[in-house]
Length: 592
Image (cartoon, rainbow, N blue to C red; front, side, top):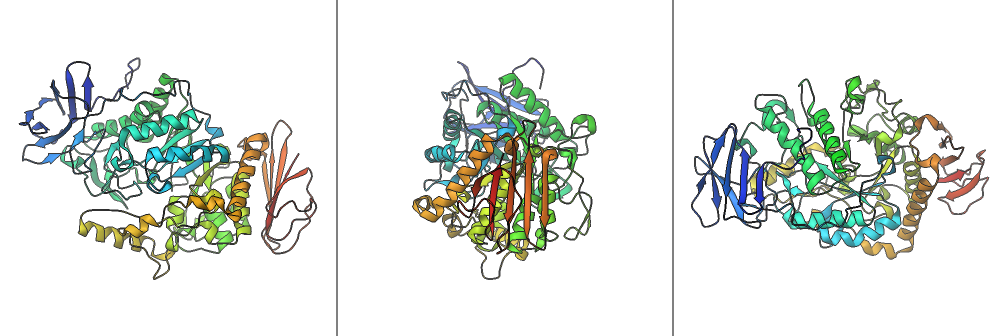
């Protein structure tokens, strides 16, 4: 990005004040390109270097268009802002300035204040749209959430999908409400004081409707990902690919006022350039946020346990702001459920929970039986608010048999302990929609591909990938509409006493976390964890320079234990209890 020049999206369809619409596409692999408008002859486009461009004076916002390649193939715009007819249909001209925002005073919030709530738009409400999700913002505010994280929203095939099969990175999904629907949701979130995080995929594209390779060298066969061809970030023609992805990040930040991006599975991003794509993306993203006068963040999902993801450039790192900490989930879930298959192997002891809380990465160079090698690096010196922890997310629920939620895999007493560990840890907490009231519906993997052969391959591949985590006979075909319908949130559960009690626990713990510096300061260096594997208890102590301190005592056994704790009893998952005795299988939080 040129310093001093305001950023705007230079590719795709750009409405001009009185001159029509300018179309520009990066297509180095096309010998010729024409603009195909509805019911009109094709208009040849002009070539300039690796780009094709054309100004069409009689085109307006709302009109649809496609690009006609030399052999007669008609394809949507790689930088389409809207795909009202789906991934195979024509693109639509969108005026980025037509939406009237009301969040002019919104400047974002500090990352250390983020309490995430992950949402799948299609199953969050009965209607499954951006606008209908606005009706739930009061619930999230009352819960204490500060940031809503949307699973990917780019146009994907059909109407049922997690979003990781998206192929139009710039086009909010038409079934969810398209561009105006997403802008309305973001605007409403900001009016409610909520940040918005968007999950984006820069490691691959979905298999259906993926036409990018017909325009340029977007992909490479030099590397492989489990989900499709790897993006070409370091081979011939890479410059246009890198621009395409970085522009996408700046597009969400600028045109949609998104506050943070969650980068999906960066271990599937391969780049041996002198300057890694993640470092370049991070720098341009922060530069644009500063130009807009806003706080905005880049958060990674990484399976590398590599501190270089978070380390500053001076230390050879990418300097991303935070990353997901899967091993917090693995440690807590495995200890409480006994599940230890596939990637959960090698967890299951209190020492793993202790290490996840006080250090971050559990596998920090030690031997992993699952990976069959020494794995990871130490994150001991990185503060807790560089990590996003959770006891559930979309992947971890759907990877179980029948997509069972954590509250269905253990007793409610155990579940409440897991909740307390999450919300009292020094990490940034993330909740998955419905977990705050112990939703009983599963969250399954679902797709709606139109190609029967592809649909079969997806179903077979899903079974093979998670066979070790699925009980025979319990597998639900992702293509079946049942998988989608069964995954919808049951909001009526809030009227039940048991579910209301769980919601109350979440609200109380989040309120205490916000109120007490020792619970939200992210100071791992002021966090101590003691445990007794044989007696099955764990104690977490949190401190703060202000002098406030907290002690969370978790009793995983059926025996009553009398811990030596100072301060007042602020919360107990077993009820008011006795300040000197912790009943079997419960958690108690003391504050001073």
